[in-house]
Image (cartoon, rainbow, N blue to C red; front, side):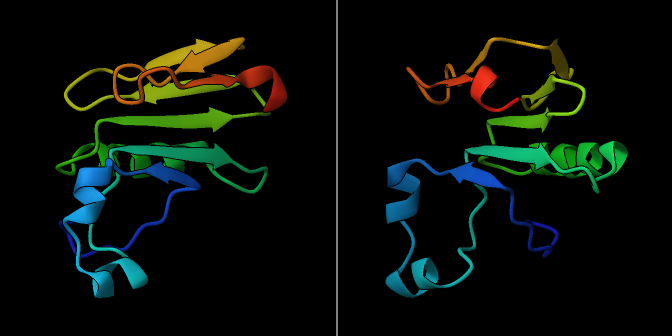
Length: 112
């Protein structure tokens, strides 16, 4: 991150042109780039407030356009977008990656 912190979300996606702008050496290590899309999947030992703070930190980074925090226990998906209020979906059937990931839809029934 721009703060120097190294964070690794459970899932991330980087646009190919951004990835290709890195050197081969950078690609082989912990890449110095923030993903366009990040997903955190809350585990039973995780604290919701801690993960919400982590997601807020991601949203402050240049390049990050979309984030999902998935709480399987409560069947909630928190959707983060830069400069916008967090959206909370309760027991959604699916979640769309539009417009960051056109055509990507995650079937939440397989996640719950």
